[in-house]
Image 1 (cartoon, one colour):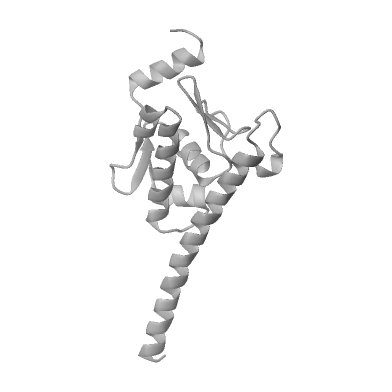
Image 2 (tube, helix red, strand yellow):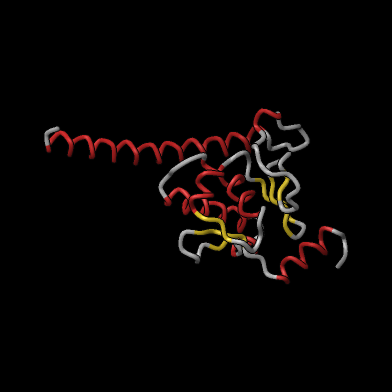
Length: 167
């Protein structure tokens, strides 16, 4: 194949990949906004068709309402990458999960690592805006190539006390 043609194909593929990432981010945002609008009244049941296929038995999340529960507060994430990402790292608190596992489990395949960083930023912002800045700060990406939900003993104790109604 000609060198010029190969270069054109490379540039076109790079452009498509970049545009694809932008479109996926926009779709996730609109899904999140529509979910919030349509299911704002959580008294209405959320149709089973929109429930994610995630692990049950996680005390921090509620799969029925797509919410994070922390120290008496609730943060609605919707059926979004934010929810699926948080659900994935909260399955194994205080352990790091590799980018590869996150991309497979949350996105369903290869993506640019910037996809993870973008979701983490939006997740942290959302948690902070709902009064969960300590939980937001626990989403740790300081270990290169990994993210984890690194919870301190104090924060776990506070969460447990509130969950069980003690002070």
